[in-house]
Image (tube, rainbow, N blue to C red; front, side, top):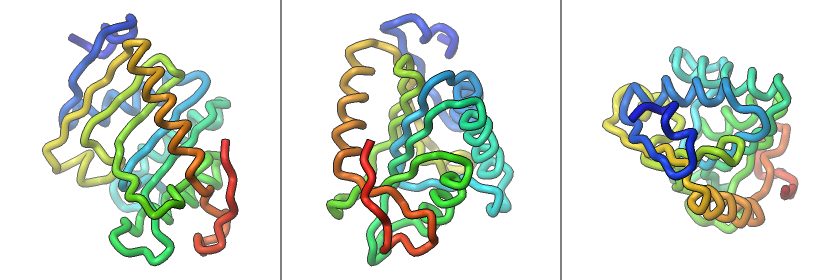
Length: 181
């Protein structure tokens, strides 16, 4: 089954290894309204040397420039223990292009990997949006379009977002301001 086949409600498609990033970039390029993401580790930005991290940032930036609303929830702790340092850098760079980046304020580890695109398609699985997940790890995710699954994932995302704080636009995230929505 190809990714084009899953645009019909009720279909799914397994995305592994290099197929994931290729299709993810394609889907981000096709988004019209919203892209909502949860990921433990985020590496997307022009400051990274890796071409995948730069291209992911550019693809997200292009979607935002087209008017697509983008919200990203990453893992974070103010004491920075057990948190990928790249989340801070990537979130701030993405905010500069208009993305809304958040972290769970309750201290819970944000480990889910969910991507919702226009409420028509979701991707869930093991892929972080990180260089290793996109280039060298053995990873598997599933793209799905069953309306009930999309509704449940939307509800989960919105509930999680209620417990989040938006990254501040300054580099010291300990001064982050609360913003929900």
